[in-house]
Length: 284
Image 1 (cartoon, rainbow, N blue to C red):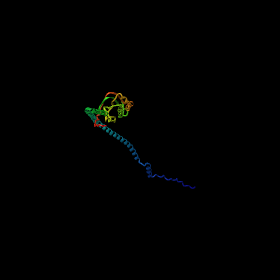
Image 2: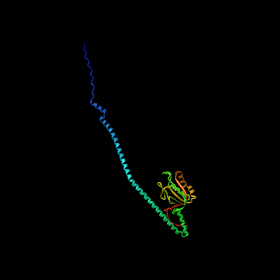
Image 3: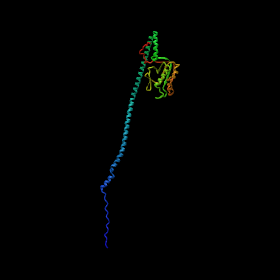
Image 4: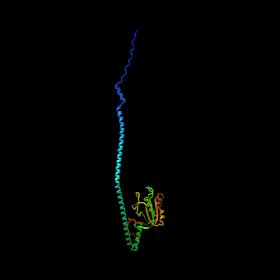
């Protein structure tokens, strides 16, 4: 019997060992950044956010401190300068009052001298009939121009702002006073004054800010308007005039206060700024 040789087990090739160099390459591909860098970045991010917030708070505190310091300095300066400013204001008011008083004295002196000149003029013209007629003509012209004071019966009008007047409604304007004066002229007034200021053809009634000026002098309400004329006809004629209707509209719709009374004797002063500079005899 022939014996067969025993079969040798098939030998499989051993598994290939991974090369160490390939392992390093795979590790680099999987972790391109070292973990130590990532950990440092996370730590820096956390600490950086805290530092940023802390820096912002510090800056806000510093800014608030600087602002408070500046406000304190401004307050101290205002407090120190307030007495000096008030002192200058009082001095300015005193100078204005002194100048106004001197101006009134000069006007009164001018009126006194003008009256003296008229008396001398009248005495010189009264020697004959021609001179007396000329003097009468001069008196009429001076009455019309406002160069002499006038006394006689007439209307007294007192007009004032509304009780609760504001900047837009209820406050009298220069045009309101103009309409009132024009209404009195239309009613037959021979001489008119506003708060002691004679109204002539050269007088300007204007607004200067919140004040009304008459002949460039600032007036304050209430405004007292005197008009010499016929008391029997002037009230009705004034009410029918456009000026009278204008102020009545203000009274009815805006609360402007006005009273009108008839007086037996009123004094309308002369305009101290008017003076006779030359005269010319006109021949026919």
